[in-house]
Structures are given as C-alpha cells and as structure tokens.
Length: 67
Image (cartoon, rainbow, N blue to C red; front, side, top):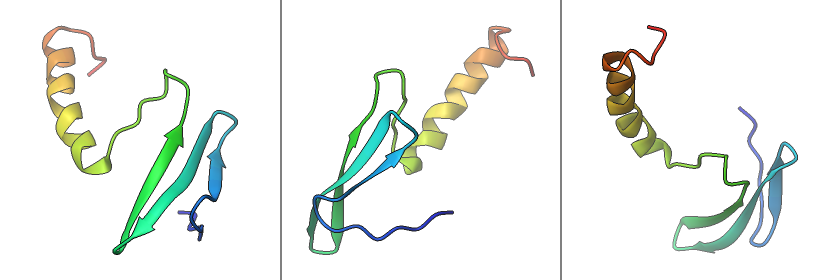
C-alpha cells in the first residue's frame, strides 16, 4: 500500500486517467473529489462487497460466470 500525505486542494493521479483531489478537511473528515472516465467504476469500499455478491450469484445462475 502506498500512503501519501496531501493538503486541501492537492491531488494525486492514478494512471493517466484518474485524478483524486482533497476537496475539504473538516472535523476529522476528508472529502475527496474523483475525476475519472465514465468506464471506471468508483464505489465506497464498505458497499462494494455487498453489491458484488448478488451480481456474482446472478452471473453464476445465468451461466455467465466461468465458475
């Protein structure tokens, strides 16, 4: 894992197409702005696994998955 320190209005880039900017820091919370192409899926980690499980079940049931 790469850990970076950023101040408000500073950004990092992931590859050539994704830019993450620290928009605001207040009361121990950080707000991030993410610029990415439409084909890049962006989800909060805590809900990603919840959303992926039913999709995987549908793919297996529909014969779409390689499992």
